[in-house]
Image 1 (tube, rainbow, N blue to C red):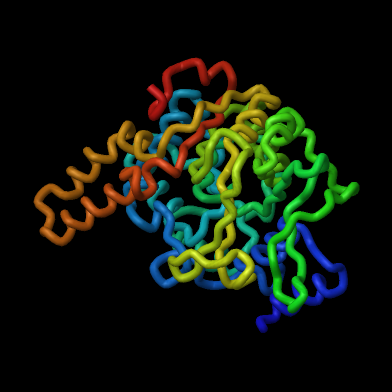
Image 2: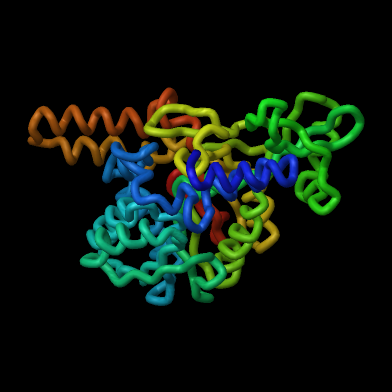
Length: 363
């Protein structure tokens, strides 16, 4: 039994159960044994691969989208470039390289990253490209215009799940069965953690359907609020790319290890546990801070509208056959609806006044 599994098992034995949220938080963010404190989680040798690791074109095009916001909003020299959960620094490296192909000055780079091992990798990848400022949380970002990108960040936040059954609310959790095995089950809703206010508008729909599950990520609100406040007060833009949909309903809890699906309870601290992002919650929070959240569009549609196919053709001109085949494969993985093109969505957060103008990717 791993060290983290022993810690969780001891808590289950002592308390009888724990919420799914607390299990995810321990599995992903335990300071010594949590998944995101491990050395190798992203890439071919890790457990999953992200769009920036698939193709340089992803970082190039999203970087140029942010550069467009910088220029269009006339942010001059007082904006900052921010990435939430920058992984191995691949996206930011490609973004910087593309930005420097424009006449615009490169803003200071700020990365929100809690993992010491990933910070070390980011330092190695980015040290020769720009000066980097790290933050443990978004609250310490400077009060100035913010150009932010978050790719596969919000899906990694620990979630709560609720269900209305037998005339009462239940919260999903983990408990021990009679043989001492861990199982998912529905627990009496803890009075210390009542149904969140944001879900109250959706509660009647869940009450009408006894099998309906509502999913909620508690840490999404404080993070999105800070980002939206900066954009609403000072200008800038936020680009959020993740798999998700525009409501809170359904059970999308999943885990992956070595690029294969696994039981979410089977490998705490060793497998990536995620859930689909509720983009309607992000939109609601942005509106509270005098921002507009552009409706999520499929990643494939967004990248093609920014010129992905043209960029791939440019890179493939006079290239060796192996490179041309690789480019075709990269484009397919990014835009094919059966790959990442449909499930992954792109949302932009913009100041209210500026959002009224046509935006690349949402024409």
